[in-house]
Image (spheres, rainbow, N blue to C red):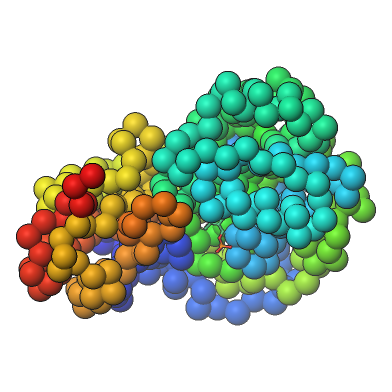
Amino acid sequence: MSNTAPEKPWLLTPGPLTTTRTVKEAMLFDWGSRDSEFIDMCAYVRDHLVELVHGEDRYATVCMQGSGTFAIEATIGTLVPPTGKLLVLVNGAYGHRMVKIAKTLGRKVAFGEWAEDQVPDAATVGQLLEQHADATHVAIVHCETTSGILNPIEDIAALVAEHGKPLIIDAMSAFGAIELDSRKTPFAAVVASTNKCLEGVPGMGFAIVRKSDLSECQGNCHSLALDLYEQWVYTDRTGQWRFTPPIHVIAAFQQALREHSTEGGVAGRGARYANNCRVLVGGMRELGFETLLPDEVQAPIIVTFKEPGDAKYDFAAFYEYLREKNFVIYPGKLTEAASFRMGCIGALDETHMRGAVDAVRWAMSQLGMSSGAPPAA
Ligand SMILES: *Cc1c(COP(=O)(O)O)cnc(C)c1O
């Protein structure tokens, strides 16, 4: 990508990610939080995000200062009333995080769990919904960044809607690259952040919430600052934020959203990432590496590779060699198998992915490794 900043390193991580030079340049000005130019920026961002889910006038975006987790905590704390109960469908660390958030907020919570390389299946989800008929809300992660698995969000949303329960989706690592259409996937709220597939800088999360749900949430939230209802009402009334907004993050985000449109929106961005993923996985397989997931459930977001069985392999040294070639990878997050992860998202294209595979080949030769194959089972 010609627009990609020449500054290194390249981040092959699940976020924050490599951003374009133009996104960074959008932060070179200072605006007051009541400046009309800034207020217009916020309106652009909020409306644009609703358009991405085809939410028309049924949905509203509520922005929240902080990282993605702040927005998830705000959403759970505001939507699920103190007397409510959240049922979480878990197949990785981010599902578990939602369980922990609900517990921390003193909400009743139940969860069903699948292995990290398995998607939640309709039969079991159906059983859980009957078993926890008292659950007021259901939550699931769209792409579980733990493994990189893509959950069948449309099917699950339909099932949850059949049971009449509002669905909260953590789409943090997929939003903007994998379609999420509110007309096909009924949800009460989808939560994401600036710094993943939308390629902005970190500092803000947001929830796109169904207005008919949100309008009933006054007084639910345990927190003053994380109250999504109050944030929504105040912004709708004044165009402003209740507390200091992350102004430069929003300026960069507006530019990032324009670049997202220019690339062809969700389809265009998703196509580049899918190509990145294909090139990366193909190159790594040639070196003997194996992916945790079969291609059918692999999201083109982040790929988990099994640790090589070669006795010369050492993650810390491998990481440092790649870093020397300006590629930053990510440790594994699986509870079961030893692994590491490489992302295909951010302002990077297939040239970078080939560069990453070349760097891996070089790191292997420095370590004296002959193959990236995992240990024989
Ligand atoms: C990145 C991510 C989050 C949020 O992480 P933060 O570090 O708080 O930004 C939440 N869920 C998923 C699935 C993620 O990938």
